[in-house]
Length: 205
Image (tube, rainbow, N blue to C red; front, side):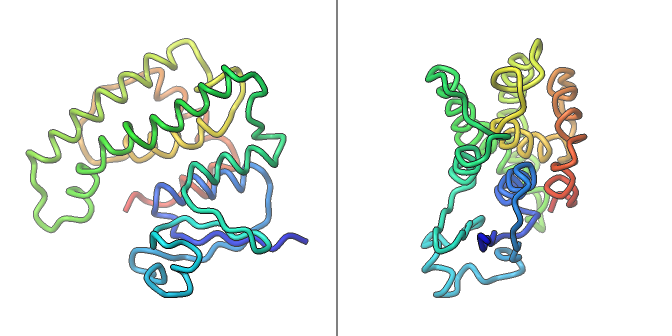
């Protein structure tokens, strides 16, 4: 039997992606809380697994993988339920949206998140700038989803997991935002999936 461990705390948006992917694939695993208040990530033993000292890290019978979207790609490659499209162009769109989540959507909201949850004296100008950047990203995603049920193709996939976790954080930040009907409809559909329960069940922190 495969011995599988996932290192990381559930309050991390990147760990949420890996947890959701594993649960969606129906894979058994042990989750070890790490990072933040749990520590561990600076320990030499952990750095031997992930030299970045970040979470998540997946261990599987001696195979080690870090970077949340790489973990999602791997899970899709080995599980038919999350299979990557065979068509090169459809697969390229999967890669495109995974990269957009990591380089555009999530980074846009990072400063607002840190100011609202990690700062003892939040800077409202920094929050406002970050929210404005995120609104532009949310508008792109909302427009893309206007006539779609899922981000790529006609079935649920890893782009929905990655962007769903980012949207979960954005839609729950304690700030005003423009209402995006298509994004809300898509997010509600994702959140209703049984495998989303654990990943999206923790308070934003």
